Amino acid sequence: MKKKNKNLDFKIFSFMGVFLFFLFFINFSSALAKFETQKSVKLTRIENFLIYQNYEKLKKQNIVPDIEEWNKYRNKWYGFEIKYPNQYEKPKKGKIENKDSQKEAVYEFRKKPEFINQKNDFIGFDLVIYDQSEIKNIQQVDEIKNKENPKNYDCGNFPIYAVSNPNDTKLKVINIDKLNYCFNQNYFFSSSGKKYYYNLIPVAKNQEIQNNINEKKVMFNYPEFEKIAKQINLIKIVRPKPKPKAPKPHGAKKVNGKYVCAKKNDKPSVSKKNPKGHMDMQCCLDPDEVPNPWCTY
Image (cartoon, helix red, strand yellow):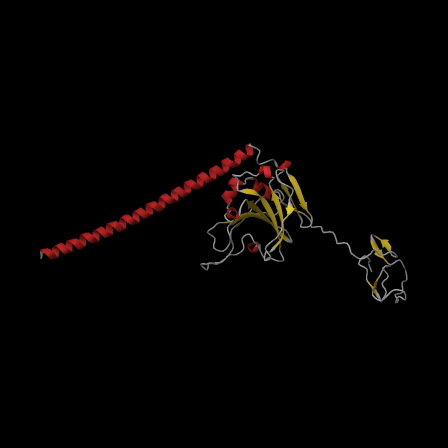
C-alpha cells in the first residue's frame, strides 16, 4: 500500500513540476518579447534622433548646399528639368545593359570624386525614365519588379505617399521594406507626366548596399537626396524633326519655310531625259519620279 502511495505522490509531484515549468516558460517568453519590443522602440527613437541630428549637422557644415546655388539640367527630349548640387559632375546618359529592362533611358548624376566620402554609402543618383505605353503602372518598373512569390502571397498594391514640392509634379515616394514578399526592397521618388514615369534612384557605392537600400539609410547618409527629388520639374517635350538625307531640291520655291512646286499650272509627265525612279528635284512630282522628302506636295 505504501509503495502505491509513493508512486502516486511521485506522479503528482512530476505533474506539478512540469506544469510549473510550463507556466515559467510562458511568462519568460512573454517578458522577453516585451523586452525586445521596448528595445526596438527605443532603438527606433534613437535612430530617428540620430538622423535628425546628422541632417542638422550637415546643414550647419554647408554639406547640404543652398538650392539657389545648384546647377540646372534640362532635357527637352524627355520633357524634364532638375536642379542638382554643384558638387556633382555634369550628368551623362547611362547605358541600359539588361536587354529585358523596361527602361527607356537613364541619366546618371554623380558626385565629383573630391566630394565622395569613403564613410558615406552613396555616390549620387540616377534619373530613370519609363514609357507609360510599355508598362501599366509603377509596380512594373525594374527597381521593384515582382520577384518570386515563395509563399503565394497576394501581390496587391504597396503604400505610395504623395510628396509636396514647389513644382507640383505629382511627386511620390516609394518605400518597400525587406519583409515585402512581392516586390524588391527599395526607397526612391517617382514623378509621372502624360507620357513617362521619372524615377529618382539613390545610387550606392556597391551592389550589396544597393540591394539593401531603405529610408533610414538614405536619410542618414544622403540627406540632400530628398531635396534633389523635390526639384524635378516636367516641361513640354520638344523633339526636332530629323533632316532628310535626300538632296535639297534646286528648282523649287520656298514658301513659309517649305519647298513647293514653282510652276503655277504644273502638268505631270514622264521624263525623257532621266531614268525611271529618279528623285523629284523641283517639288513638281511626275509619274516616274520618287517623292523628295524636302518637298511639300
